[in-house]
Length: 301
Image (tube, rainbow, N blue to C red; front, side, top):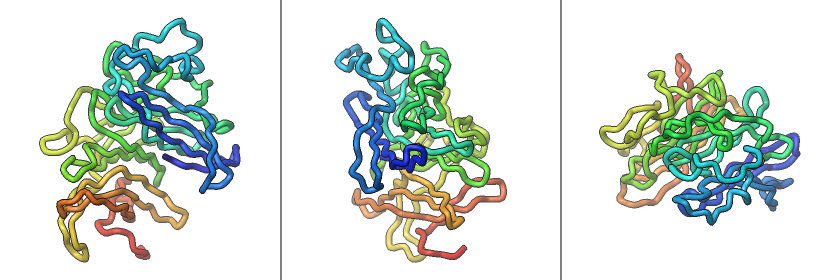
């Protein structure tokens, strides 16, 4: 889940993934007067996976599809196939206000890419007045869709999850995790940036975060797209054991003037145990973020 204070609603808004079979998933909104809750259900923000493999058990008429597209006599053919390759999976919401005050949500995961929708700050739900053009739905390279919004990363069945966007020092930074989260899954955090909240997001070599074909993007001999935030490293300094499979991070540009990286890591001890760690981040001369190698412990710098 992702929780954000909405000053217009005067509510804490929790955006929560409800995961189903074969990409039958949804992101819903719950609200509360207190950050600890209790939270009350308000409605769906986006739903994916209806009519997977011709299975019509998930009736599009019971979703908000027609609120976005208008009345349709049948489910548009572009939504009847390619789930998880062309179309997103409605999990891992990241909700944020951009620098112009627009409320936005990035979402998605393996492996139809990361997408973005504008939200209505009056309701916290999707802004149905914002329309998205339909790019060619006959190929996996679709980058915009009237229901799912605008693609900002991934696609073509390439791995990528846990999108997080934070504005730091003049750029919107997009963080993603590639690979699988266990100790041998090649999990790694990658970073892109843009001057605009909805992209295009590119890495230090000006390569776009959106893939144009199916490529392996983690582990050995992989596509090296995205700035690597942190990698596996053995015990050194005051560490008692090495870290590996770091990922699914968030970033906080905090009120104390520091920027913090929050992520979970496993260790090179043969187990699958994991911990959440916080590291301070710094901005280089050319504007990219780098993480300190040791966890934050109140340093003054």
